[in-house]
Image 1 (tube, one colour):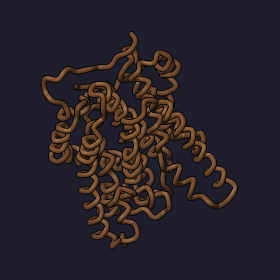
Image 2 (cartoon, rainbow, N blue to C red; image 1 turned 60 degrees about the vertical axis):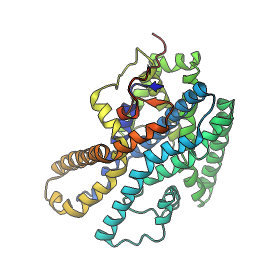
Image 3 (cartoon, rainbow, N blue to C red; image 1 turned 90 degrees about the vertical axis):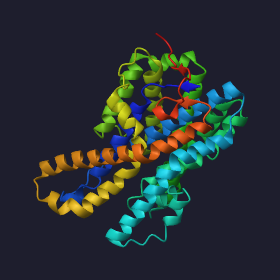
Image 4 (cartoon, helix red, strand yellow; image 1 turned 180 degrees about the vertical axis):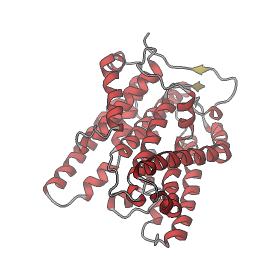
Length: 375
């Protein structure tokens, strides 16, 4: 069975580029600027990735369960390994070699966390490895999927289970925030804040409502004011004007992402349509864009910063925000074509339900199910 959810690559593209631009801004002092550009954009982009991941994987699990009356857990983990691990460990090797060559960094205190997919631990506790800091999100995602397919397989009341789990998670998060605000004891809140299980659960809840064709859910998501608010929120995020309260921002971004997914994939009258070749191209290589960009920034700092500093500030900005994204996209594209695509073809052998978001993940001759709701 082959499924195409429109617009998902567009959301991936927006999230990936937002993370890259934010991290360039955070390195501006390395290029002669007085201070870095402090932005929440990277955090918003990661929350979008989490919500999208929770939505898509849950939707595919529900389709598999409906079609075959079960979820093949073994095949699920084989698919995850084939999609995530090869590039994860390849980049890990590249990053370690670059750090040892350019900075003689001492990696002994933290490297094992990255090897065993627990990069969120050093990130939350304040001793991440440069060029690998962004791996915290991959650690969180892999940890969530250690549990989620088992729950989806066993539970007949997924939505109820998610509401309870989400409520408990947010309650604990609020409690740790209270501790942080009243004492100097901050690490529990940092740990909870970086465990974006709430974003993935919100995405999963959206997938369940979408899968069940819940009329109220679609009526709310399809409402013109809701669509306008969602897209205006994306604009405010880009302008760094969305920040409401750090304790709730990630959940709000996850909800906005569900609204966008629902309209892009299921609403024939969606306000904005991201089903375009440019967005599709960037979305397909978004994993590579996310993974490679810190190393590219690091190498530009180590090899080109003295030359870039010689230009005036405006020209420096133009160089950084064109050269680094373009280089990242090129590297991600080559990685996708020469490395990842081969594994994605192998991944289809363990998939009962295929998505059309990556062309090679589908087998020829299968019927395409394009979910569309409303008129």
